Length: 96
Image 1 (spheres, rainbow, N blue to C red):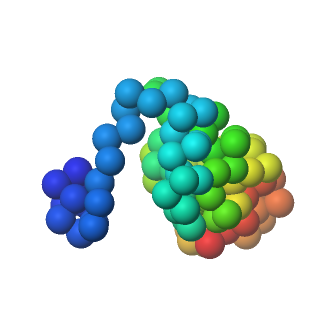
Image 2 (cartoon, helix red, strand yellow):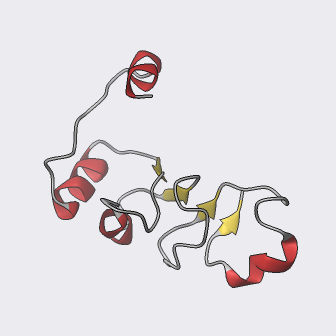
């Protein structure tokens, strides 16, 4: 997956060695418009970066399919099958 993303990107940065505050600062400095979380509440997540709201639009998808519960997470990429309409009121994020 990393190789595929690298080929489709103009720039790829390894941020594994950065703490959450430093990563949030990098996102702000790089003027990232949309920040996408792919881990949710699983191991080695970066939710504390997302808690700092470094990007104007933040979304979560696929790695942990449930709400993050975070006010700073704007959207959850989903459909009516993976997130039935009757369940949406229990999610902090808006379904996108």
